[in-house]
Length: 87
Image (cartoon, rainbow, N blue to C red; front, side):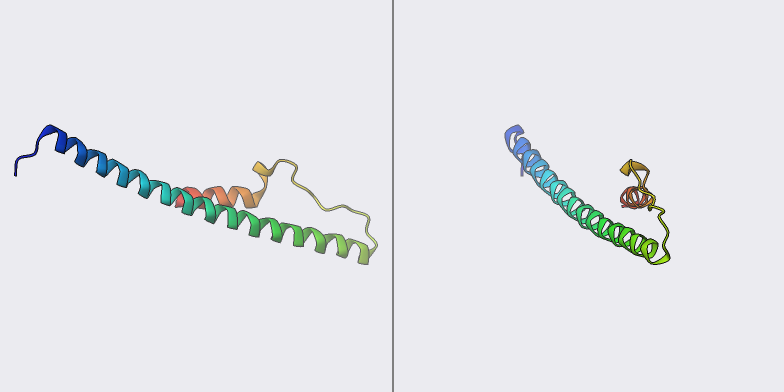
């Protein structure tokens, strides 16, 4: 079978469309996974803050828990980035 330049172009376009669709599906999957992971980490972090706050009240301590003002320096966020780079 002899391929003409127009049929070759159509094959290339179909291949590129498939490739873009697959890449977009991977992007959406990773985006959803990161969103779930960050939500879980946020819940865990809030639970730890609540526990520290309640333990401080029980012991009579007035010391406030340490809050990470810059989310980029938080150990959990850095761990998520390392994990996402591994993927």
